Image 1 (cartoon, rainbow, N blue to C red):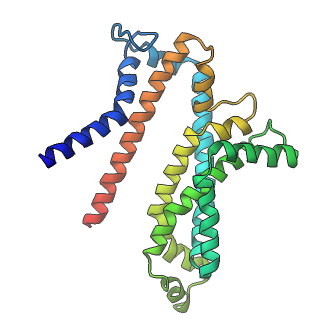
Image 2 (cartoon, one colour):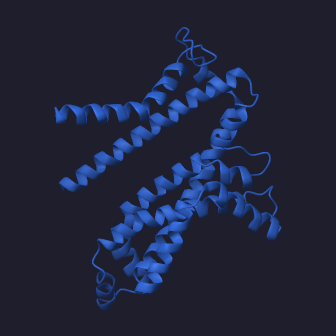
Image 3 (tube, one colour):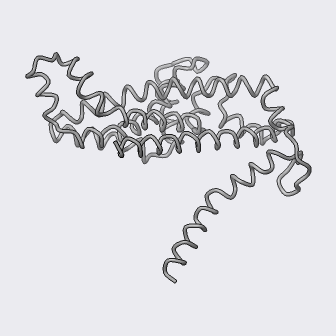
Length: 262
């Protein structure tokens, strides 16, 4: 009876998490114009998605921005984790405390603060992408730090010093000893930063140029008066994003299982 209850509870949680996405995926393959009435099977939404220049430009711009932000955040977060790991205990504790604040802080507060600091205080031009990239890096870098630090904590802290004693320069020891240990954490942090950049709305809406839209800001604006074809095409876009994320997660887990077996 206890086992049955546990299974029932797990199924209920999974339904709560994934049923709305499944409903959206089903409607993306219909000709329905609103949720609630299923019409015939159709690929019209996917055709609209891939043949509308406005949507394709928005998707390309979003992924290019997310890739750049994820790359910068991975470099900064990894270097910060290495620096904190080899710092004194008090310094490391202070860095960890400061790194946790952007994680638990509300995105709207971060976005508004970055907007005031860069655009109002420093007078930076909002029509450039610099405030947007900086704001998203502020959001994503601490998450990369939190992914890399456990890999360093599980490593022998004296390996770096041993490499120096054996003739390596500091840069060689970093590349040959530290980097191989933290690559899994860096990859995980990169994917986390990529997902956060794709998903963020508040920081992006405060710092983006007026003529630029990401998926999140475009979806919000689309619900306020876009054409019906564009709205339903976003159902197809959401479904494709979900499928891609599932494939990436499955591949990462299979790769991790193989490494553990080795």
